[in-house]
Image 1 (cartoon, rainbow, N blue to C red):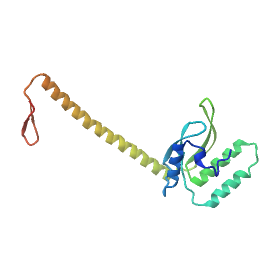
Image 2 (tube, rainbow, N blue to C red; image 1 turned 135 degrees about the horizontal axis):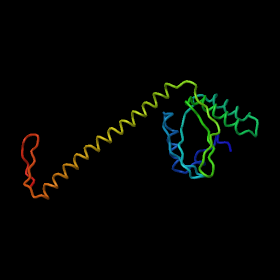
Image 3 (spheres, helix red, strand yellow; image 1 turned 30 degrees about the horizontal axis):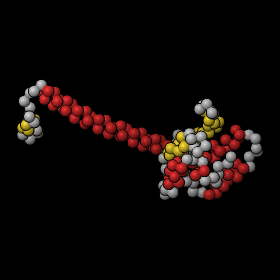
Image 4 (cartoon, rainbow, N blue to C red; image 1 turned 90 degrees about the horizontal axis):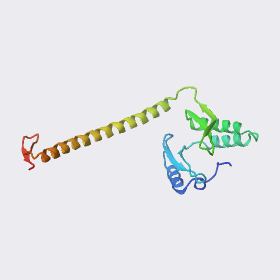
Length: 178
Protein backbone atom coordinates (compact mmCIF):
# COMPACT_ATOMS: atom_id res chain seq x y z
CA UNK A 1 0.00 0.00 0.00
CA UNK A 2 1.50 3.32 -1.05
CA UNK A 3 1.22 6.15 1.47
CA UNK A 4 2.14 9.08 -0.76
CA UNK A 5 -0.88 11.33 -1.02
CA UNK A 6 -2.83 9.46 1.66
CA UNK A 7 -4.61 11.65 4.21
CA UNK A 8 -3.08 11.04 7.67
CA UNK A 9 -6.57 11.07 9.18
CA UNK A 10 -7.11 7.69 7.49
CA UNK A 11 -3.96 6.13 8.99
CA UNK A 12 -3.89 7.31 12.61
CA UNK A 13 -6.39 7.47 15.45
CA UNK A 14 -8.25 10.84 15.66
CA UNK A 15 -6.14 12.32 18.48
CA UNK A 16 -2.91 11.43 16.64
CA UNK A 17 -4.28 12.80 13.37
CA UNK A 18 -5.16 16.12 14.97
CA UNK A 19 -1.65 16.38 16.48
CA UNK A 20 -0.07 15.75 13.08
CA UNK A 21 -2.36 18.21 11.29
CA UNK A 22 -1.65 20.87 13.93
CA UNK A 23 2.12 20.26 13.72
CA UNK A 24 2.02 20.25 9.92
CA UNK A 25 0.34 23.66 9.90
CA UNK A 26 3.14 25.13 12.00
CA UNK A 27 5.46 27.58 10.26
CA UNK A 28 8.56 25.93 11.67
CA UNK A 29 9.00 22.19 11.92
CA UNK A 30 12.11 20.96 13.66
CA UNK A 31 13.73 17.70 12.64
CA UNK A 32 13.98 16.76 16.29
CA UNK A 33 10.40 17.31 17.43
CA UNK A 34 8.94 13.86 17.75
CA UNK A 35 5.19 13.30 17.85
CA UNK A 36 3.78 10.28 19.68
CA UNK A 37 1.09 8.75 17.43
CA UNK A 38 -1.02 5.59 17.35
CA UNK A 39 -1.80 3.58 14.23
CA UNK A 40 -5.50 3.21 13.50
CA UNK A 41 -5.00 -0.33 12.16
CA UNK A 42 -2.83 -1.80 14.95
CA UNK A 43 -3.37 0.71 17.78
CA UNK A 44 0.41 0.54 18.30
CA UNK A 45 2.17 3.74 19.39
CA UNK A 46 5.31 5.08 17.71
CA UNK A 47 7.09 8.36 17.08
CA UNK A 48 6.41 10.35 13.93
CA UNK A 49 8.84 12.95 12.63
CA UNK A 50 7.56 15.77 10.45
CA UNK A 51 9.79 17.51 7.98
CA UNK A 52 8.93 20.15 5.39
CA UNK A 53 10.89 19.84 2.19
CA UNK A 54 11.14 23.04 0.22
CA UNK A 55 11.63 21.65 -3.23
CA UNK A 56 8.67 19.99 -4.93
CA UNK A 57 11.02 18.81 -7.70
CA UNK A 58 13.02 16.68 -5.27
CA UNK A 59 9.87 14.97 -4.05
CA UNK A 60 8.59 14.33 -7.56
CA UNK A 61 11.98 12.89 -8.54
CA UNK A 62 12.00 10.55 -5.51
CA UNK A 63 8.43 9.39 -6.21
CA UNK A 64 9.25 8.78 -9.87
CA UNK A 65 12.31 6.81 -8.85
CA UNK A 66 10.19 4.61 -6.56
CA UNK A 67 7.57 4.05 -9.27
CA UNK A 68 10.22 3.06 -11.82
CA UNK A 69 11.70 0.28 -9.66
CA UNK A 70 11.19 -3.28 -10.86
CA UNK A 71 8.47 -5.05 -8.89
CA UNK A 72 8.93 -8.00 -6.60
CA UNK A 73 12.00 -6.90 -4.62
CA UNK A 74 11.04 -5.34 -1.31
CA UNK A 75 14.70 -5.01 -0.32
CA UNK A 76 15.46 -2.76 -3.30
CA UNK A 77 12.33 -0.73 -2.57
CA UNK A 78 13.34 -0.24 1.08
CA UNK A 79 16.94 0.61 0.13
CA UNK A 80 15.67 3.22 -2.33
CA UNK A 81 13.28 4.76 0.20
CA UNK A 82 16.01 4.92 2.84
CA UNK A 83 18.42 6.56 0.40
CA UNK A 84 15.86 9.12 -0.81
CA UNK A 85 14.70 10.00 2.71
CA UNK A 86 18.34 10.38 3.74
CA UNK A 87 19.07 12.68 0.80
CA UNK A 88 15.91 14.75 1.20
CA UNK A 89 15.92 15.11 4.97
CA UNK A 90 19.67 15.13 5.59
CA UNK A 91 19.13 12.95 8.65
CA UNK A 92 22.34 11.42 9.99
CA UNK A 93 20.86 7.95 9.63
CA UNK A 94 17.66 6.48 8.27
CA UNK A 95 16.40 2.93 8.93
CA UNK A 96 13.48 0.76 7.91
CA UNK A 97 12.23 -1.91 10.28
CA UNK A 98 9.75 -4.70 9.74
CA UNK A 99 7.60 -5.35 12.80
CA UNK A 100 6.37 -8.90 13.29
CA UNK A 101 3.17 -9.96 15.04
CA UNK A 102 5.16 -11.27 18.02
CA UNK A 103 6.46 -7.70 18.69
CA UNK A 104 9.89 -8.56 17.31
CA UNK A 105 11.48 -6.21 14.81
CA UNK A 106 13.80 -6.84 11.91
CA UNK A 107 16.18 -4.31 10.35
CA UNK A 108 15.39 -4.25 6.63
CA UNK A 109 17.48 -1.34 5.37
CA UNK A 110 19.65 1.45 6.73
CA UNK A 111 21.89 4.28 5.63
CA UNK A 112 24.26 6.39 7.68
CA UNK A 113 26.26 9.49 6.84
CA UNK A 114 29.99 8.97 6.45
CA UNK A 115 30.93 12.04 8.51
CA UNK A 116 29.46 12.91 11.86
CA UNK A 117 27.17 15.83 11.17
CA UNK A 118 27.92 18.97 13.17
CA UNK A 119 24.25 19.87 12.98
CA UNK A 120 23.42 16.50 14.53
CA UNK A 121 26.06 17.04 17.21
CA UNK A 122 24.70 20.51 17.99
CA UNK A 123 21.11 19.25 18.23
CA UNK A 124 22.22 16.34 20.41
CA UNK A 125 24.21 18.69 22.64
CA UNK A 126 21.19 20.96 23.06
CA UNK A 127 18.98 17.99 23.91
CA UNK A 128 21.53 16.76 26.45
CA UNK A 129 21.77 20.28 27.90
CA UNK A 130 18.00 20.51 28.18
CA UNK A 131 17.80 17.15 29.91
CA UNK A 132 20.65 18.01 32.30
CA UNK A 133 19.05 21.37 33.09
CA UNK A 134 15.75 19.63 33.83
CA UNK A 135 17.49 17.14 36.13
CA UNK A 136 19.36 19.92 37.96
CA UNK A 137 16.17 21.95 38.47
CA UNK A 138 14.32 18.86 39.67
CA UNK A 139 17.14 18.04 42.13
CA UNK A 140 17.12 21.62 43.44
CA UNK A 141 13.36 21.39 43.91
CA UNK A 142 13.70 18.08 45.73
CA UNK A 143 16.45 19.49 47.96
CA UNK A 144 14.22 22.43 48.94
CA UNK A 145 11.37 20.04 49.65
CA UNK A 146 13.70 17.80 51.67
CA UNK A 147 14.82 20.80 53.76
CA UNK A 148 11.20 21.75 54.45
CA UNK A 149 10.38 18.17 55.48
CA UNK A 150 13.40 18.05 57.83
CA UNK A 151 12.30 21.30 59.45
CA UNK A 152 8.73 20.06 59.81
CA UNK A 153 9.98 16.80 61.33
CA UNK A 154 12.16 18.67 63.81
CA UNK A 155 9.31 20.97 64.82
CA UNK A 156 6.93 18.03 65.24
CA UNK A 157 9.49 16.17 67.34
CA UNK A 158 9.97 19.23 69.57
CA UNK A 159 6.22 19.56 70.02
CA UNK A 160 5.90 15.86 70.88
CA UNK A 161 8.67 16.15 73.48
CA UNK A 162 6.75 19.07 75.04
CA UNK A 163 9.77 21.38 74.81
CA UNK A 164 9.20 25.17 75.03
CA UNK A 165 9.71 26.36 71.50
CA UNK A 166 10.77 29.51 69.73
CA UNK A 167 12.35 30.29 66.40
CA UNK A 168 15.06 32.87 65.88
CA UNK A 169 14.85 34.36 62.42
CA UNK A 170 17.70 35.98 60.53
CA UNK A 171 16.66 39.32 61.92
CA UNK A 172 17.15 37.80 65.41
CA UNK A 173 13.47 38.16 66.34
CA UNK A 174 12.06 35.32 68.40
CA UNK A 175 8.73 34.01 67.15
CA UNK A 176 6.85 31.97 69.74
CA UNK A 177 5.14 28.91 68.41
CA UNK A 178 3.78 27.53 71.67
